[in-house]
Amino acid sequence: MLGVARTMSKPVIPRSCPYSACRSRQPDAAGQAAIIRHSLLRTRQGTMPRWRCKTCGRTFTANHGTPYHRLRSSPARFDRAVHMSVQGVSQAAAASTEGVSQSTIRRWLERAARHTEAFFDALTVNVEPDELQADEVRGYTWDKESRQFVFAMIEVSSRLWLSRVVGNRTRRSCRLLMRDARKRCRMPDPRVLIVTDPFKFYAPEIRKTWGSTCVHVESGKIIRGNRVIRVHNHLVTGTESQLDEARARCQDSKKLNTAYIERLNLVIRRSLSCLHRKTESAAKNRTKLTEAIDRLRCYYNFIRPHGALKFGREIRTPAQQAGLVSKRLSFRDIFMAFRPMARVPWIRDERVRNAWIGRYACAGNNS
Image 1 (cartoon, rainbow, N blue to C red):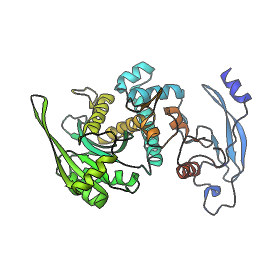
Image 2: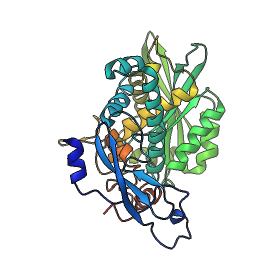
Image 3: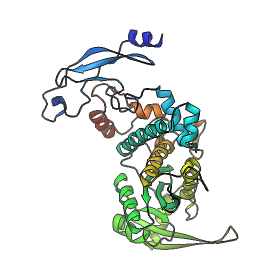
Image 4: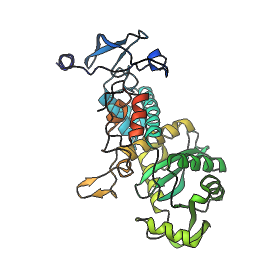
C-alpha cells in the first residue's frame, strides 16, 4: 500500500539535471534542461518515479545524490545506524541491533561522513565571532600506539563547533585549525577574543592567521590532587584596553577560561566509542577517526539541542543560535538536502541558499 500511495501522489518535477557533466549545467547554457518522467522504479519500500533529462539522456531518481541512493535498505535503518554512531555505540553493537553485517554499517557511516562534511562546509560560513576557544583531546587508533589529537574550536556565544583538525600535536595542526576557523568567520569588527591553553604553537599561528583582528589570552591551570588550585591568564596579543573591550561584548564568560571548549571535549569523548577510555573499538586509522568527528560535528551543531540555549520553551541548536538555519534539523533533513528536487527554506542566508540550490538542488523549487 505504501508503494501505491507514492505513485498516486503527484510527484515534484525536478527543474534541472543533477549530473554536472550535462550541457544544461554549464555556465553558457541557454536555459534549464527539459525533464520528463521516464518510468517507475520498484524498491523494497515501494515504487518511485524515475526521471530523464532530454539534454543528456540520463535518468535519475529522487534519491540521486543522497546517501540513500542504491542503499538496498530503508532510509530509517540508515538514519538509526548513523544516530547510534554519535551516541557512543560501537559499529559491532549497531550491526547487531539493525541485523546487518558490520561491513555494511561501516559503508553506511562512510557515506554519512562524506555528506555531513559537505553539508557543514557549505552552510558554516560568515559566522560572527565574539569569543573563540580552542583545545585538543587525545585519542588512539587501532594499534593503540599511534596517538591522534582532535583539535577543536568553539564559538562561545552560539556554542557552535566551528572547526576541527585530526592529527598529531604539532604546529601544522594548529595552523590548519586557525586557518579553517578564520575562513568560516566574518572579518571581526571589533576584535574577537581567543582563549587557548598555553600550548606553545597556538600563539604564533593565531598571530599569523588573525593578526591584529584578535585579542589572544592563554589560560593555564595548576592542578593538584585532581583539583584546580589556581588559574593564571597571560595576555599574548593585544592590549589591556582591547581585552577589556572584548570582554565587555562577551555575555557568557564572566572570567577568562577554557570551560566551554573543555565541555565540548567531554561531549566528543562520550559521544564516540573510539575515544572512550580503555575502549575496545578504537578507530582503524586517522581517516576513520576524522569521519567519526565529521558526523558528530554535524549532529552537535544542527541536530542536538543545547541545554544552554534555552529560550522559554524553545531549546535551540548551535546552528540556530548562530543564524545558519531557522529550525532544528534531523539526519533526514541533512541527507535529503542533496537530492535533485530538495527544498531548503530553513537555510537563513539567502546567498548560501541560492548557492546550495545551484549546486545540489533545483532553481525555482525552494519557494
